[in-house]
Length: 329
Image 1: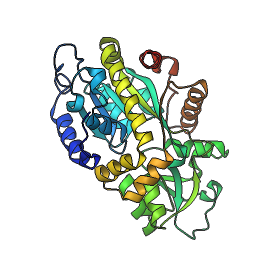
Image 2: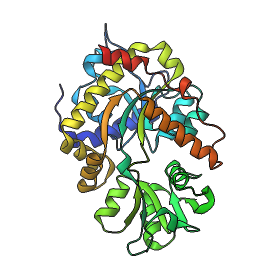
Image 3: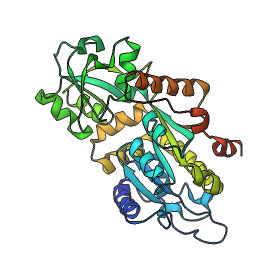
């Protein structure tokens, strides 16, 4: 097992990003690496997720693939939706990112093959200290910023649960890394965001929490495969899931080291990284009936808000047969 300190993973991440950006779908995944090995996939993931780069650096994918898997092509994306878009184009085989109903509706060749995290406490609506805003009902007519071009799923579900229409707030798009400046300058009245931006705002005492996702926003992080890749490369999919499961176990057993990677790779403070890791629940699982019901509820909230034409057909979009094979081994 490779043991190079994880603090060096930022350089590894930058190298992998260049490899992912410069290679096409036909050769970016790398060769088989020798007799008995399995072709490496092309993967997209959000840079702040530590399991994949940590596992590659530590050699936790090597046994499953039968080769040194550290050369796996990894492209870092800002959101799961961006990753699914790359997958839909055929440039990516596997994506790790937050569940987004709109992305799944638009990518008919995408299949959810696993859940790898639920972290409701990592998402929140923030307001300036002393604003007097203490509930979602207090946001009537106010400007709320969020990452997406249309009403963010978190806000759509929060409004729906409160029995409020989608136009109850004046929603505008703000980039995630610009939201705090917009909030503190008064350009927006409230800001919907997630860790590490949420954690950093708390640490600097620059924002109060109106509501976080506890009790209503599951925030499932999912692994998505391209349909044809799932059918044509079942061994590679199962090898990836086996390695990812080992990586998730490592993150749970070594939270301080995982937080050090997050801080170094993203530029967030060490304190924000520690809060982020602590608020996340990492586990490689098959979505339960309750998980799927929540996904449907989220999709319906977006349909009701007028930002989604229909909810994804999850009976088609979810295929966990590969994960079930891995878990049963």
